[in-house]
Image (cartoon, rainbow, N blue to C red):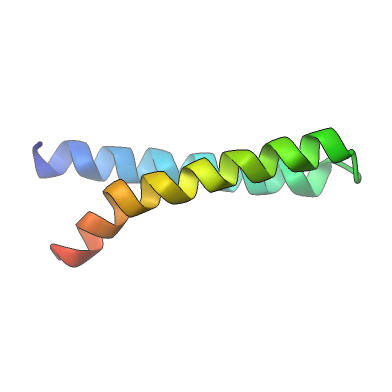
Length: 59
């Protein structure tokens, strides 16, 4: 995969992470939202391991 596409994916992953964190903050303690945002963040972590960390290693 070309490096430019990896960088674009990395940017998108970071945006998703930020959005999920903001959603958790805005939830006002609604447990369903908190749990689902946590699941999203867990999936984002896997994406970071797969994409973002590879970019960091290759810099």
